[in-house]
Image (cartoon, rainbow, N blue to C red; front, side, top):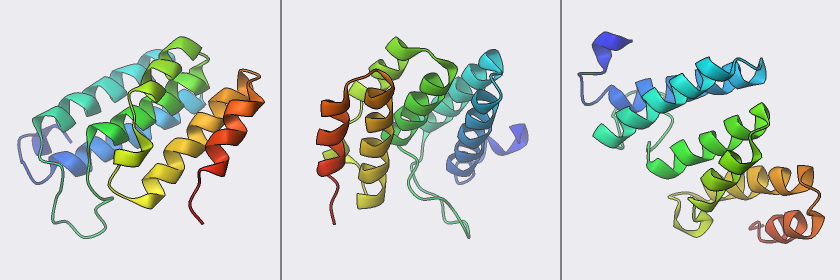
Length: 130
């Protein structure tokens, strides 16, 4: 994948693959790998562009998507403060699609649930659009 990072159109796709791999590493409690992969994806997203014209491209790769993965990864790894930091960096009302807004609210609600704050979890879930 390293050779694709220099290609502007490929960067959003490579970033998405890195985020998915980071999430997989977090699921198997490989903390160092998960964080390194997430940080690499974040640096690619910062370089841009947000979109690519590839078939099956996962959609705009923006900082809100990187932060959502950060929320999920840190939550899986048990790093609550870091997960909260990522959660507060995302405005669900400013993400580009309703699906992404729903994912942000859902992932944030899971974090609140695990922290024992069921009222906040329920409040977020009630904001979901029908």
